[in-house]
Image 1 (tube, one colour):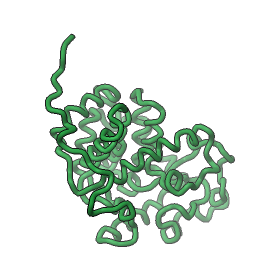
Image 2 (cartoon, helix red, strand yellow):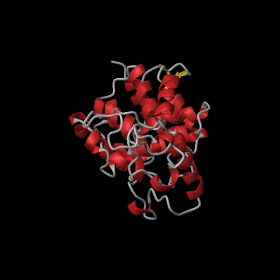
Image 3 (tube, helix red, strand yellow):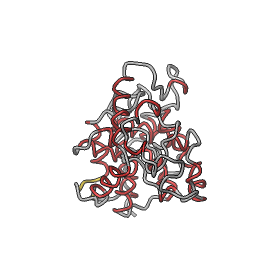
Image 4 (cartoon, one colour):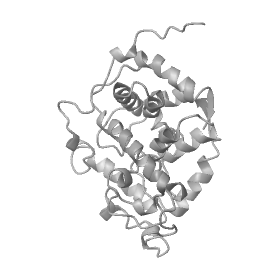
Length: 285
């Protein structure tokens, strides 16, 4: 049997703590103060004005066919060197570093779950849409259902939806809207963004991640649900089974955003092996 030398153990290079000594849990996701607050608010204002049922349906038609590009998963990850998320109040560095921060935080606590680590690495890769022409308000930020009432748990709910036509449409602005009680999130149109896009890419390319990992990717930005406990009336039994996994992922996505940046080159060999296992070869995007 051929032995492949993976080089020095990258776990010796970098392992983020879930919170740093200078930043505590309560300091994360603060949308009310700091130098980034205005551009964060502006991104959400545009998102909440334009993300409606018609818009989301159009984006599904544009992107779900995965006919925009062909490249490897690692190339997609590294392309995020060019992207700083305008909706995120916690980081001002490229998203590629956040990918490795999240993955390493997971590997520290779950060394036996390589698929979980891989989810941490790729969870934001759908943001490549912003490099291909989509405005960031259609790519980043917290997600929420369209086609039913916009609940108060959505960030900036009170000040950013006034110009969204669905907010005054009686077919959409009631509790269930176009849905039925406990219809299941799989049957709910979410605001369009990187979560849903990457989920579609992984399914289109038949990447063998477990359903827990696919749900982490698809709903990791659905903060009104997994962090605020809202929209439970749309969930079915499968969603309730997946919720603890999405919550488990969230702490790594959020609390590994520290100023100490990983040495990507030292980590890349290890994570390339996970990419080769779960997302091999050239993918269609």
